[in-house]
Each structure stands twice: as C-alpha cells, then as structure tokens.
Image 1 (tube, rainbow, N blue to C red):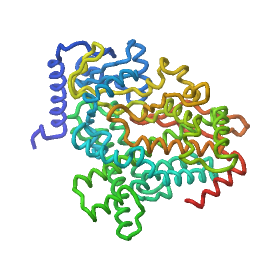
Image 2 (image 1 turned 90 degrees about the horizontal axis):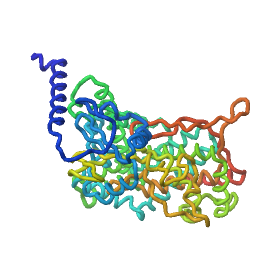
Image 3 (image 1 turned 180 degrees about the vertical axis):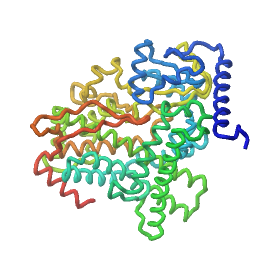
Image 4 (image 1 turned 90 degrees about the vertical axis):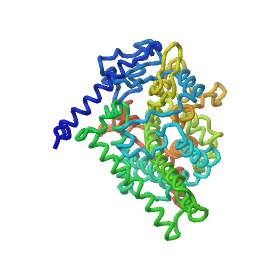
Length: 512
C-alpha cells in the first residue's frame, strides 16, 4: 500500500490541499474595495477561530457596537461572511436586492448529516422553485385554514395534559409540537414521546444542528475537510444521517400501510399517494413532496417547542400581562364559557401583542439561515464579493434600541396603540427574509396563537415554590444548539383559573 494511501498520508494530502486553498484565496484577493469592519483576521486562517459556535446573535451585536457598524465582515479561510445587525440593511439586501441574495450558502456538512432533503437549505434554482411551489400551494394563507381542525384537536389535547399533570408541561409542549406536523403531513398519530420516529428525529436534529451551524464544524469553512476520516464531524454526521433516515422512513411506511388497509386519514402525503394511484406523478414530484413533508416536520416541531416554552416562562414571570390577557379573553369567551377559536383572533388584540412580543424577544432562530451573494455587490461603500454568506442577525434586530424602547423588557404593550388597538409593527423576523421567508409562517402563526390563547384562557401560570414556600425564580438563560435557541429548563406553577374553566377543558375531551 502506498504511504499516501495510508491514513496519515491522506491527512497530509488534505492538509496540503487546505493550505493551497488558503494561499490561493489570499493571492487572488481583488482590489475591489473595502470590506465592512470586523475582527482583525489572523494570518492564513483569517477569522476562522472567531466565528461563535453559540450565542452568535449576542456576540455579533456586541461586535457591532465595538466596531460602530451595523454591518460586519469576517473572512474564514477565504470564505467571506457578512452579518447584518440592522433591519434596514436586511430589507435593502434581502428584499430590495433579493435577486442577488436569494441563494443559499450550501454547507458541506448538509449532505453528510442527511439534510440534503431540507428545502430551506437548497440553493436558488429550479429545484428550489419546484419545492417552494408545493409549499405555497399547501401552506398559503387560505390553505392554512385546512389545518385548523387538527391544530384545535392537538391544542385541546395539550390543555388536558396540563390539567392532569401540570408539572410535565415540557412534555406536553413537546407532544403538541411533534404530533401536529406528523399528523398533518403523514396522518401519523403520536401517542407517546418514546415513539421510534420521535426518538430518531430528536437525535438526528440535535446532532445535525450542532454539525451544520457555521461555527459547528471546520468542514463548513474548508469543504475538503469533510473527507477527513475519524474526526468528530464524521462521527456525529454518521449518527445524524442514520437517525434522519429513520425519521423519514417510519412515517412513510406508516401511511403506506394505512392506505393499503383503507384507513389512512387525509394528510399531505396520503393525498399525494392517492393522486399518484389515480392520475400519476413523476418521480421528481414524488421526491419533492416527501422532502416538503420531512422539512415541515423538522422545522415546525423545533420552532413550536421553543416558542411555547418561552411563552410559558414569560407568562409565569409577568402576572400583570396575564391579568390583562385574562380580562380580554373573558370579555370575548365569557367567564368559563368556551375555548378560543381562530375566529377570535381579531377580537383579542392584546393576545396578539403577546404573540408578537414573544417572537420578538425569544425568536427560535436568533440568526437567520445564511443567504449567499450570487454576484459581486457594493453596499454603503463596502464590497460584498460573490459567494459571500450573508447572515441576518434576528437577535440584534429585535433588540435594536432605535426601534424598541427598553428592548430587553417583555412588554406586549409596545405593539398596542393608546386607544387599545394593534399598531402596524406586525412583521415577525423569526420567519426570515425576502424570498427565503418561511413558507409555513401562516400555519406556524396560527398554531402558536391558538396555543397561547388557549393556555391563557384556561390557566393561571406562576412561579413554582420551594419547600420553604419561597418562589423559585425563572432565569433568562437559554440553551443554543447550533442555529436553534431553547429556554433553559425551569419550574412553573400551572393551575386552572377556576372550576368552570376546568370543566371547559374536560368537556373538550370528547372532541379528541
């Protein structure tokens, strides 16, 4: 065997290729113009060691103040990265110049972890357009209403869980977040959290997010490193890929069995497979539909889980906010009258303000998935080279003191006018920017609103107490796993507002 074919020899070849790539990048630097400010790059490696693996939103915001700029630049081993801390800049590039910033920076680890099915990560082109068209047909504002009965049933199931075992609120939240997309996509009814599909999805998503994030693996900066064996990235990617395949396979096998038995409920995949049997579909259409279903499950479950957990924490910490919401809901629903419906949304502006404020202060994705500059560009006197990864810092935009007074304070009233109406600030940055905005935002918004309104209508949330009767404080701590942000574990006291509301919840059991 040649020495170069041995493991050490292979590593030398790869490292040599890496060095050559870096030197080539350095030598090919153009004289186009200045880049935006940012940390001083180190020789050869640039800012590779500066990219934060977690708390990226906060760190980039601090850098913005340090360098007195809303636009930041890093160069990691020749890969240009631009971070936008201002909504005005994000609007200019992602909205007004969307033609140049709709592409995605394809992470080399995407295929390694088995996420090449995820349409949110697709580069701009015909494949992306076809997948997005399927999403728009099924998840637009009008089509989103088809999900209402399923959302209502799953939220009511969560209320029953909170009533019977309030201390397990995290589990009930997970069940809602996971079971709803699995049912609407596949007709797959989840009854327990140790379901094999859920276990596989949890492992695959948790590991995959760690590897995929910009600071998670050097292979995302130096693509050739994905071929280096025996590394942490290779081990983690293999596990993520295996679990992702299980997550994709089990629900599909389920719906196929149910259809063969003639008992499959309507779902995105079941309806498509029926169409396949009657009028026929292409292999490309079939693969695209399955990709959409799997993307929806992964994205919807994680973001719903994160947002609802943050909602529970903030309600427990803000009794005055709860009191205002209770009064508004009682006026619409009656005291112990009925559960909220989607038709009540326009009649409950303060609950809507709570939703907006929660998504502002606790965006599930503090950093938007990176866009990519398709061509060289100039902006505010700065040069943005073709291929630059451009990241919208949602965390910073939502805490911009120029837009929000006391931005670190949870205050739904900031979205209300003096006469008690909602103001015009209705954009949820957590759903992304430009043509890459989340196509499932209407379904996500209605799920979260109904969840928040239903919990507020039925329960009083407060801080738990220790053995001495003292309140246990709920911290501001969050856990960031790759691109996702989750509230750190906390304890909470949840109890029905009255016996009348207890009966309302129990009566809803008949519709499950």
